[in-house]
Image (cartoon, rainbow, N blue to C red; front, side, top):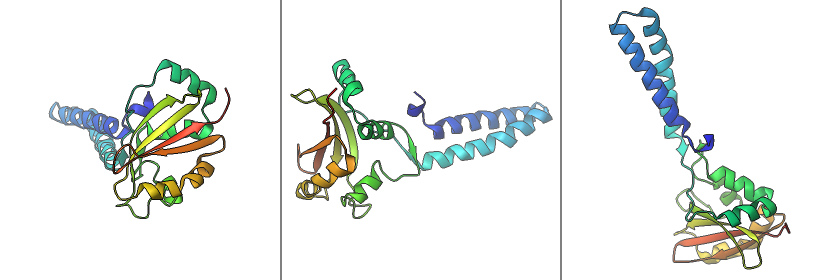
Length: 184
């Protein structure tokens, strides 16, 4: 739950309330409350503004995860799949994009302008009953052929116990499916 709350927004609200309380205390001639309101409110509001400027919003799910998939996730998901799911579905601070370091390592992000953007996720089960985490990227400047060249490197990077499948549902979009090979 806390992962879904923007710390920048929270700090901005708390700082603003404290500052307004300090301002009200100033006009009501309550020196102690006035000092506390300004002394704590303004810095907290400024911290909130700083966090908001460095904020990276969570990646949404493109479709809801069914209870069946959740049960299979509990049994079969790898540590890497779990970590990716936790990292991209929470607010992040100080990063330019989700998975930016992984994409750079894999050679899929030569520049910030060319970097694919993780648009959404979904969880599903293959016909063989394998848990699958599908990452949906907007990738207009990196060709699908380039993604396919990096598939083996992705398996090593996201492994062990992960098979990677790539799909291009439409031009400029790539789906990276991390399929668990753990028998659960």
